[in-house]
Length: 485
View 1 (cartoon, one colour):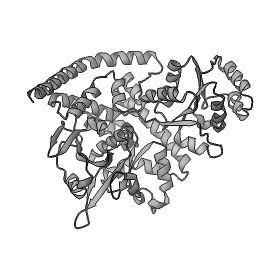
View 2: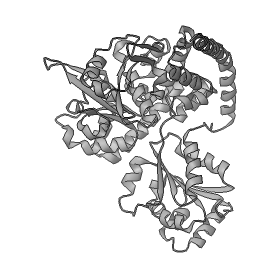
View 3: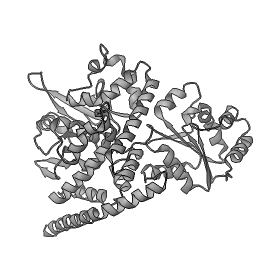
View 4: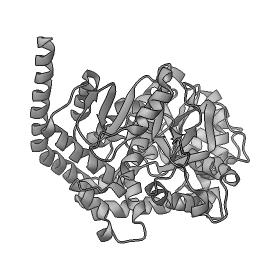
């Protein structure tokens, strides 16, 4: 027991020293990154999907093409080219958003693959090597026949193929083609918190947090305060690579906000492809307003007058498929198979990136009026802005592969409800999550839920803004430890 206490003490003391070192190194690291970014047109960030791509290359050995799906501006094209540079002798990148008619027309007739490959090598001045070259179809949705050709290209087996595309456009542009079954599809998300820390030159924080979470021990006030400052920076900037680049280049939130507003504008253009009437765009823009009301579900009628949920379920599904939003559905009878009692008419909607959420709140105002930046940086976030934490927790849970569900329990009078913000599958049981945007440790909703479903509970989590603690069977988890749940 004494050795265990000493080990915990050593861990905390070492973590404090490590965090002090990080503080001293932050300036030099960020300075070096900024200098490099000013010289280079693009900063290449380390992304976890790279390992997934390596597994595909080794295990499938050219038997399938890799289709990287995701929202726009999350770094799909960049990671595909970086992978090609490091894992193959040569590659050809065909960007269908900026390609000559000559190249595009090559895919109208692929009966002679020898001719196709000769033409591509001549046009791009790249020599292809059998089983050691890859051809990237970037923004493949803009040339559906190129995607249709994957079946025959993979069967030929000379080269590997990587496709990238926005899911909205991939679906809308693929209606009239034969979808190839020879595709391995992988989803890509905005940079998660660990990837964000990597981008800032920090490779020690996340391992420290994981160790502390696994040992169920607090880190101490000084370390916790710094960790919260770091995490609030992530909430403000978000995980869109262009926004992170803007921060590294300028250290200026105005520049970061401009980038995020441009991305929001692109998403809104894409929503027109889902629904020309503008309902999808209206639903997206109203996400902050809906969450701020703390209602039991997204109130469709308040956003689109006289509209009903059952009439736009297909739009909600398409928005969710686009990966620009995260949707949490009500589970009517929470158990191991949460999806079995999913209620499609009761849901909450979050933006896929909390950095975009911050900009979306004040989309129609100048950034000078955006009090969220100042309040978050100074840890002065008021209760009525607490929905920011709910959005970022939804984002972090999705990044770890978890589907989003929530549950409500009516009061005895039937007029009010206890609400569990998220319910996750946990081995053969479920674990409820109650979110607090402050340090308060009250948990009436959590208590009611655990009493009602006592035989189904694995762990009880309350996510908040204070240091880790465990008390009366409840784990009080600081928000930055959410990925380890």
